[in-house]
Amino acid sequence: MEITTIGSNETFAFGSKFAGEYEKRVICLFGNLGSGKTTFVAGFAKGLGIESRILSPSFVLVRSYPFVKWDKNFVFHHVDLFRLEVGQIDSIGLDDILDDPFAVVAIEWPEKIISRLPEDRHEIYFEVIDEFTRRIRTN
Image: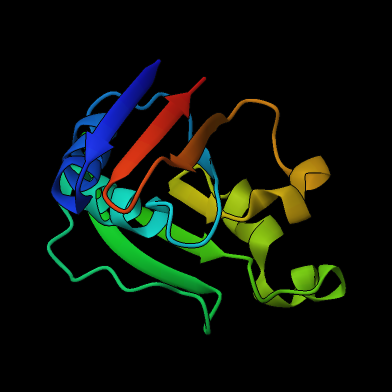
């Protein structure tokens, strides 16, 4: 699927809609800085029913938010690997997060660890068209 959004509100809304349709627990977000990845994640979290303000995990690497789905307790993990060096991957507990059957994980800059991620994942590509317009492609 491919969609063009104009403004952050449309990117947020697409993330929220995607939360109602996602089928895989791991979502990989590819795109340059400022391409809309974190805005999409904020919308996705809202679509999961998370009321907390979603902040970029750029400096803490992982932010986690509990939510309930199908009367079960889940945790949504927002991971940002932009500042992470490959040798630091084990220090953030990503393998434990990925192994948790009640975790949904959105990873920004997944190309740094793509070989360690499950093949059963969504990949979403963000492209900046101009100051307000983004092209978003999903698999």
